[in-house]
Length: 118
Image (cartoon, rainbow, N blue to C red):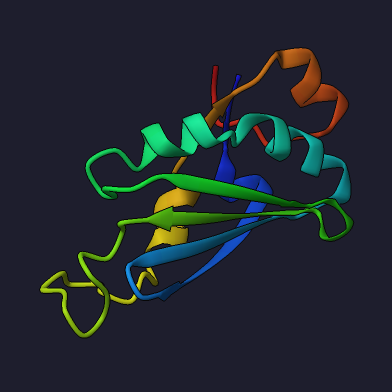
């Protein structure tokens, strides 16, 4: 079943130089393991393909029910150098939350995850 990340997490983003920072926080503690399992470095890299030129680094904060990602090469040089519309990285959290997770129906039911279809 499809579960939209925006329905099970919230996110914040910012920047430092040419790197965007995206924190993803589970809305419920029991949903953190799903987020931690599904938001791999590889998946986030694919999700931002064409938007970033560098690598992705993931940090786990299980005591906060959160993950933090550094997206290198995301800001075309950073706020003072870039001609991008969002040279400060504020929209990367919204872009991350557009991700859709394909989860087993049994897991969706057992965790009371809000499904958006199958």
